[in-house]
Structure formats: structure tokens, C-alpha cells
Image (cartoon, rainbow, N blue to C red; front, side):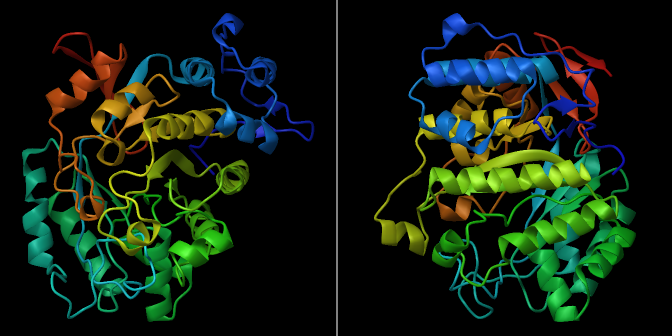
Length: 406
């Protein structure tokens, strides 16, 4: 897979093919938990962490020690640079056949339900018009599993977007949406991906993974694409040269072992294809959805400590991923800023009108200005850099408002 990470793992767990990566500089004096000290030794030796190591990371009460480990590993790979993209979310339809079975979702609607919508092509272009100023570099397009939004709906959309906004990258459609289109069109995943790529699809987001555990999916996303099929769609995309992101929805009914197994599956596919660009943990919001009512929760269920552990474990266990992203829409800008010292090197950018997470209670703004993004990153003592969708730095910003072009 061209353009991916070049690390490989030998049978004894040693990382090879990554001689250009510096070993992390770890101060054992900043670590209290003996288990974390043992893991620090493995990291310094370049030894791959095990599932038991990952569980120890989740279980530790030494949050500052964990943060030091994750920050050291991140600095060895990315320095003090924190990237962001100037992107715009477009959610073209909330009509979804899984309206009654995905209990954690508050966005989906049945076709005749109040609030249901499906954009026409003109409406998509009208919403995309924010990109006419040339500052937006990426459209992030996801929506519901709409029986009337098939292959022609999206290929027409992508071609029109490319014609009107040729400078904007299209990152669109989760693995669940790809499989849905394939099912209603009676096509293979690969054939759907080829048609979408030819119409203008550049990369794919990572949504729809939820938690791969079959027992968890039965509870929160019955009838949704199985974890193995999520991996299958992403493998097909990678084989076609389509880079993708990946996610994990956490903070609901999953166990720490479920999280580790999920991460291990992602790491295995990355070993195989090198096609993932970034890992993005997604915090579950219990407001305005059936699962939250059933669990009796109000407000954001994942506490700040858990949010920080999630990104830190992602950084340390996913050793073949260069980029770990914090989604400020889901965990607040404040928590994303702290996460920059827990292994995160990328944050969600200047979003315009995000709808899906706000439908389940996210109280964050629907967009963030460039100045706000820069202030957030600088406030953490990091260096802001705007990137493209392939994580190539376009321009960096110093401690003032000045910039330098990469």
C-alpha cells in the first residue's frame, strides 16, 4: 500500500523498518505505577506492547505517568507539531433503515418521521458553498442508510462537488454506508468503491466501527455491519489505494477487554495494508438516544480521565499509526487541549455545521474558527500546523499570528 507507514513487526514483537523513528525519551522518575515502568522499558527497546500491556494502561491510576509515556512516544514521532484540517461536514440525509436498532444514535429518522430529510443535489451544493472562499480543503460527508440514496445519488454528488470545488478533497461514506450501497445495488464492496473513487471520492472516514465485540454490537447496534465486515470494507478500500481513518466508540457498555480487542484488530489490518491514516476515539453521548435512557445516564458518559486514557492507549498500543486524533466536538475543546499531552497530534479542524454528534447531546459549538484552533493548540505549548487530508503539512504557525508555508 503506497504512502502508508513503513513499520513491520517481527515474530518476537520487535519493530523493524522504522529506523528513522527516534526512541522515546522517557523519565522514569515521572512514573509511579511499576507496571508502567515495565511498559516504558518495552517502549524504549522498541518492543511491541501486548494486549495485557494495553489492559494495564487502561487500569492504571497513574494518569500523569501514562500521559508522560504517550507524550514521549508522540514527540518521538511527531515532535511538538499538532495538525488540523480546514474541513466542512456535510450530512446529506438522516433517513436510516437502522433507525430502531442503533440504540446509541439520536440523529437517524425513518422516511416519514418528523425531522427526516434528504438533500437534493442543489441543497448539497448550497451547503458546500462555504468552500467558495478557497479556505475549506476537505468535505467530510456521512449520513444515514437511506434506501433512496444509492450509488447514483452519491456519484452525482461527488462529481458535482468536484466540478464546483475542484480544490476540495472528498472524504466520504463510512464502511457501513459503502456496504449499504452495495446491498441495495447488488454490487460488491469493491465495485462500489471503484465507482465512487471514479466519481471523486478521495478518502474514507472511520465511523461505523462502534465496538467490534459481537456482544456489544448486539446491545447497541443490532443489525449494523459486523466488525469483520467493517474491516473487510476498509481492506478493500486500501487495496484500491483509498486511504481511510478508523474509530472506536467508547464509554457505553463495552469492557476494557473489548476496547483492547478492537484496537488489536485495527493494528492487525494496519500491519497488513498500511492503509489507515489516523485513529480517532469517539466518546459516547447518552443524551437523546434509547441506550442513554436505558442506562439512566445524563450528560457525557465518558469522564475526562477515561477520555485521556483512551487517546493515550491508542498512541502506545497502535504503534503502526502515526496519527492519533482528538474530536473536540465530542469531548470539548478543553479536553482536546489536554489530550495534546496524552499522545494526540491531530485535532478536528474548522468544522462547519456538524449535525450527527450534536443530535445526541454534544454541547460544543458546531464550528471553530481558525483563530480558536490556533489558540487551543498554542495554549498547550504545541505548534499548530494546517494539513491536507493525507497529513501533509501545508503551513505552520509560530507563537504569533504569522505563518510559514511548508
